[in-house]
Image (tube, rainbow, N blue to C red):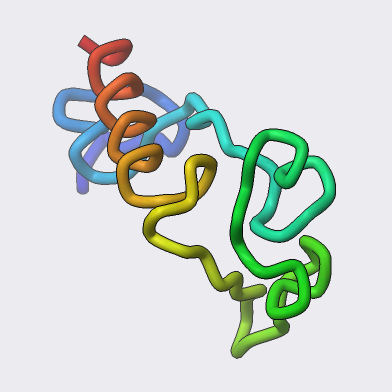
Length: 86
């Protein structure tokens, strides 16, 4: 892309994944901090929040009905973040 300088904002940048702000993340599934917030994900499967090493990343097992990591909470966080971007 001619004239593109990494890190500078340009038209359409947010649609190409060049977002500079971080989305709020809850503690990892199964961690003691997450359990204090009401997490019901398995501490054993998630190695108490350390996760399971995978190919080039750490993986977690989250339950879709978990009040901290479930689909409803995830969608709420995404909606709130999208609203803040507008």
